[in-house]
Image 1: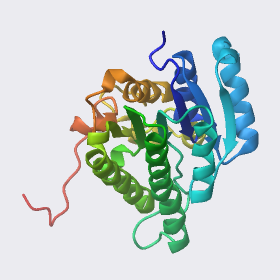
Image 2: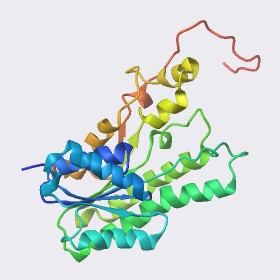
Image 3: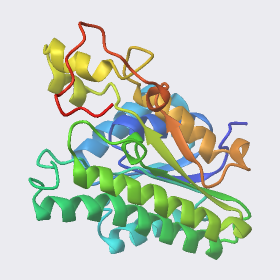
Length: 277
């Protein structure tokens, strides 16, 4: 018996990164999984990859659905799809964006702010709302909702990304309130707070720029970025009955980054003349 044997699960943002790695682990542990993403071609590649690495996937329900999480009608249809399997047990509200034009309070365009909140916050709200309606409809005695926040909801980002940071703070606060509201129904809500991850997107962006890479790696006491599968392992725990008394948690998976005072190597620099001791 797997850790999620027979559970019906939804993963949004399932076409890559944490989402795809989570789908792989969920299926290996016995779950039926609806893989949701806004990109149909990316979903096709993702499900092909899942079947390649998890041969037992042919014995589970593994289906895909194109979903724009900023639209409630799409979320409703996504959850209703899994209702036809006998009701939802677990949803991982993972879909989100960090737009290239996201900057500081002065330079972030309003349209980028609105787009980021619509996907990162409203998407989590809609997913949580329709998950609860499904849990109640099918009289679930226990159920789990995991929402992707970020370590930037705990510590500020040195590289300005105001809309993203604000959205992830909202996800964390929203998740805590839902956890308390629905605790007596045994519906658990927890937020996942990842650190920056070793993804192809990040590696392409860093390229051969050693200074840019060192500026980010220095913050990790481990000396390395995290891997998407390490986040997926945390999601698997939160989805499983092993975490039955874990509710309202900001589950930080960051290699110790947010607990570490880092002093980069190199010669000391003079403080500004107006530096206050």
